[in-house]
Image (cartoon, rainbow, N blue to C red; front, side):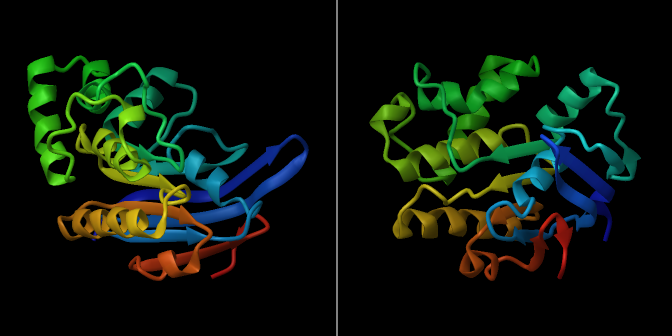
Length: 219
């Protein structure tokens, strides 16, 4: 099985505090991996570096065997937009946009045609149980529905890897189950998922758990 992502000897210091201390991590194609640890352990920093939203002070990152060049900002942006789908605790939807407009934004940013983007968005909307909500604005949706829109937006460019940072952190138990069911379904379809959570029960429902403490992977 091929490696989608590989992090080697990752170090990161923020405001004088060493957040990551020589982390090594690999994610295989088709894997559903959870990173778990207490607040301040470095798990979100690791996810941000893995998704190229931040850069390490030291260490190397490989995507499908190709070394990431952090000096090439244009290439970094292209990788983020085409290889990764991001889902955060806060959905970060654009309030002025409809559901469809929020979902297609990454495709439009990559220069794809609007008609193709809308076609793909409508398929995702139906798959994620949002049919009939296409033209609603985020404030007209429940928290769970907003997070499903964010998931659809993350999927629109058919990413190599889905990166989820506490994706159910703002949801009640019912909507947490809905989002986790979506993740299971995506993983069964072959999608690779890397999820950060502080919730051990959620982590146990993924295929593999990695524990991080004080900037080091301990298990």
